[in-house]
Image 1 (cartoon, rainbow, N blue to C red):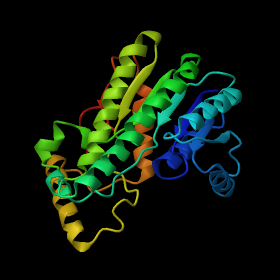
Image 2: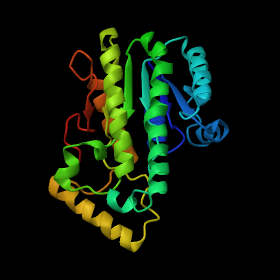
Image 3: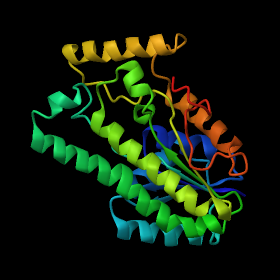
Length: 271
């Protein structure tokens, strides 16, 4: 009976991970969320037959809450954990449409937003990994998967001329580095740490964009289409999560995947 912890499981990709993985009732699936009662109600309404779902309160920006979540998880699983899917994170709206030089015209706002991205996407996940790794070491599968972004691919940024999402990208690049460092420490213990980009996913991030902002977004999408002629736009969460799970299940320390940063195709093709 494999066990999973999924952070940020109340909505978006996190909810889709919860939904898909819990469809196998042999899986013990733990959703780590900030609002436990609201998520439990959502499970009752949308997935009433899934008795293998457990909702645990935890916030990756709150170290104490993560410690409590580890204790609750160990009680549910019997002390071990097979998979940790680090999905929770923050996506900046401040940097969504303007290049870093324009953002720099608001230095205080830039600093505040970058520190927020770094605290959540990097520091929060470092605490998450450190606290849950003792459970992973007692598990059978021993896989820790960080949900990253192709926006952090250093080769793709200049190649495609991606000017936007600078602060978010910087934080995701930091996350990828942290994952590689954890892999360097724990690969010898059989623990797979890796980062996977789910591709461009339609999670409603650009729903409130102005007409001018959409023009800038259109230029980026045009570059994406040149890079990947088969790219038809953002994929639905269902397809993205299915792809990530496939990559996650195939990857292993033995195959040399430890510390890697790959796409939903399992390689460096980001779209």
